[in-house]
Image (cartoon, rainbow, N blue to C red; front, side, top):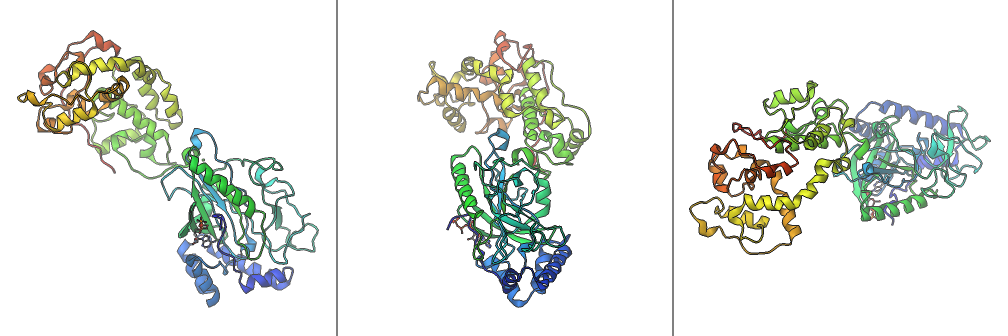
Length: 546
Ligand SMILES: Nc1ncnc2c1ncn2[C@@H]1O[C@H](COP(=O)(O)OP(=O)(O)OP(=O)(O)O)[C@@H](O)[C@H]1O
């Protein structure tokens, strides 16, 4: 059975009665009553509604409802035929980088029941990411079939599909005697499900992206019903009308090959299901794709204070990827100064400063114009003003690093003179090994300083070496000569020492400040003016998760 295929297919006697007597007064009265019940549900919690429904309906219906969790039955206690919304086929994953972490939700509904299966796709690892659902109208079933001539203008572009798509009912029973297909109150309408994406008859294969917020407010994800190959199926609850459904959520990443394959198969199944209408087949309602990287906002207040973006602290409208750009700016600044921004403030004071002031972190003058520009771009209070990661990759501060790699090899040779055999640079493994043996810093045991003679290609060397300057713990201000300095896992020394012609033997001595400028330091992208000022060692702020 395909993954998109819903499991609920049973109909209660009530639903069968409605199908046979769709135009009867009795049926209309029942629908009005059930709609009234849904209104009662509005504003109630999910569990409250479940309890209410289970106690209200007959023992048979209550049992059937509970069996939904047992993967075998339908939502007989709920009349899906009065579903208010409509669905649409699963859209294609968007290609923009911002869409790489989106959710795709497909929603289906069981005929004669409140079952909805949904598909979602996402690159997010967060199973509780905001979920949006586009709930399709429930298709008429049994004798209550629609005339092909019945149409409604629909709501929005996705609804404007050709006449070849299946027809569905909105708001209650269809009056088959009416040429318009509308019920007497004039509020109900029928419309067609949109065609699958890519269909030649569909004028708009890709639906207009929508804000997930409205839908996610309407649809609430309930407990997990089961897991399939492609995704998880949850109980769904429409907080506006009280309707229950089954929602399948599938996560995909747009640039992931297996996700693309999953999405392709899901679209095929959606295509098939959207054309099926049978009393024993759970009805597909629709699907939705949800934009996580670009649209969703996180609301949790988590982070390490000094690196937290203002919007995380303020946390009014949520936040998204730009918070990482802010943190990157903080980290780069920390690499240059050995301290993150606002480190002069204690935790809560720093958070207050970040969130409530209009200040931006101070950027030292001695940094190069490129470095200053890079940091300034990252540390803009307005999230939208910050560049994306890919834009930053084109920044001269990053681009110029590439040309410096070869030079860095030489710099590192000077920084690690005792670990070199004269012809090559040490590997990361060698460096760690020598540190693990505590021999690299052991001035009294020079016989243990010889590194293994495993040769690396120049490219490997460059990759290894260029990673060295980024370690914050290699900062001169962090080497206090104490026991921690001699621990096994310290980062390699900062190349600034090499600029000043210092050897590793001097690392533990603060007397090396101020460092003597070295002409070679001009090539460093960090520094505009190769001047070093003596600084007092400071205690580095601790990164604490709130
Ligand atoms: N409409 C539904 N009502 C109640 N439970 C459902 C419904 N649809 C699916 N489930 C539950 O969710 C589970 C997963 O369903 P899904 O359709 O994703 O996968 P599957 O068809 O069981 O397996 P596969 O994806 O490998 O074909 C089912 O086994 C079932 O337990």
